[in-house]
Image (cartoon, rainbow, N blue to C red; front, top):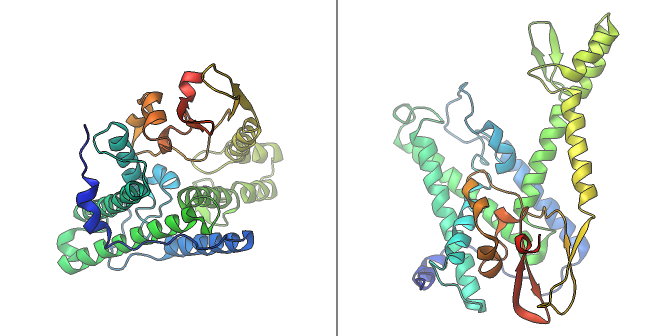
Length: 333
C-alpha cells in the first residue's frame, strides 16, 4: 500500500507559480506565437552567461549530453531540462511502483503535478550546489560565499523559467511540449552550426573551417589535388565532415519514413482494432536514467501510461469503449 505523501506536500506546492489553463480555445496563430515566444526566451537564456563564474579551459564532462539535456555550458541554461525530466521520471516511477498513491481525480492529478514541480526545483537546487562545490565555475574559496550563492540563485531562477515555459505549452497555449521543443531546437542548432560554422581552426595542416559545408568549398579552392581535398572534406578527423552530415540527414529521413508505418493489433478483449505507430518518438530517453529502460511494460501500461523514457519502446492505449483496459506494446509485439 502506498503512502499518501502528496497531501503533505500540498502546502509547499502552493508557493510555486503555476500557469492557469486557458479559459477559451486558443487559435492556431496564437499557439504559433506563444511557441515562438517560448523558443525565443529559451534561446536568449542559452546566450546569457552566469554572473560571477570564472572562465575555465578544462574539458566539459557533459559535452556529449548537452544536446539531449538542451543545456549550454556557462549560461543560464547550464542545467537545461535535466531537473524537470529527472523529477518526472522519478515521480512516475514512484507512482508506478505504488510507493505513492495517485488517484484518478482532478485533485490528485493536480497534487501529483505540483509535487513533480516541487521535486524538480529541489533537484535544480541540488544540482546547482554540486556544480558550484565541485569547482565547475572556479574554486569556491576563490569565488567567495556570496558569488557561490548568487550562482545557485541564477540556476534556480533559470530552472523555474524552463519549468514555466514547458507548462505554458503543455497547458494548451502552444504546440507540443517545451521539453521536446528545447531538445529539437538544441539538436537543430548543433547540426546547422557544425555544417555552416565560419569559425577557423588550425589543425596542423593549415587553417580549416569548422563547418563541414564551408570546409568543402574551402578545401576544393585551396588544395591543388582536388580529389584529395574532396576526400578530406568527406573523411577529415577531429572536425565535422560531410559523412557526418549525410549520416545525420539519413537517420532523419529513415525515422520520418518509418513513422508512417502502423502496427494493427486485434485481441478478443478489444472491441475494435488498434493502430499503433511503429516508431513512437514524442518523447526522448534521458541520459540520467538508463536503468528505466528495463522496466516491464505492465508497470507503465497500468500505472503511468505517459512514462517518458519508455516511449520509444513501449506505450499504453486506453480504449474508449473500455476505459479500464490498457495494452502494453511489448505485450503486442
